[in-house]
Image (cartoon, rainbow, N blue to C red; front, side, top):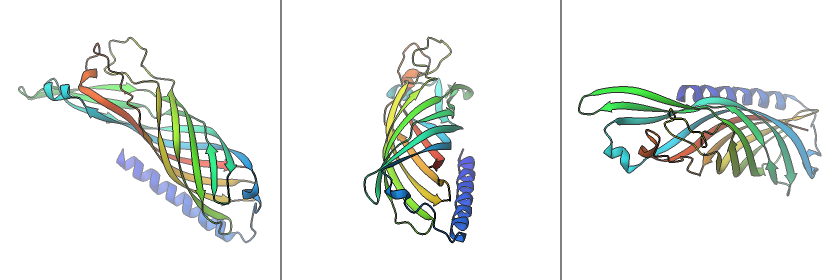
Length: 240
């Protein structure tokens, strides 16, 4: 996962350097009155790397049948709409509802006995299709030619359409709740082109709610206490 994340960051930086070079090579100043608009809209395309952060319960220490519980992750894509409203020369508010497809999470349980020295693995895959509703405050730098940077922070609410919280499946090892909320922070760049503003962005999303729905009827539900979502998102916004 870390190797894939490093590769994504390198590609993001290469794309950013190319856009900076292209922007500074342009002598005309584009879309000079863009920031005077009260509001404007756009679309979002993105890629995310998401995973779960878990905390063990006291019953984990008492169990010798589960030696290890390790969350896993994979990438997913996102598509969404963008609405931005001007507050002042440097501050804006933004809504960015998105559909996030993929990014399936998993938890791998290492089973065995410390006395016998034997171990085996059992993995529960947790498919994820999220409808995400982020609301953010942006702080914009001064514009330099056709380029500027911005910082953002905000809150989000996620609804997982693939949640197994209501399932009655004996093969499930744990259940995750459908709804989640959290906080976000990120860094982005505006590149002003003749007919569109292209804004690459990197954002960290930190889930606050405990997603674990404890069910004593499931095999290993009681060995875990908290399960929270984490996500790193690479996005490109195309704004009118």
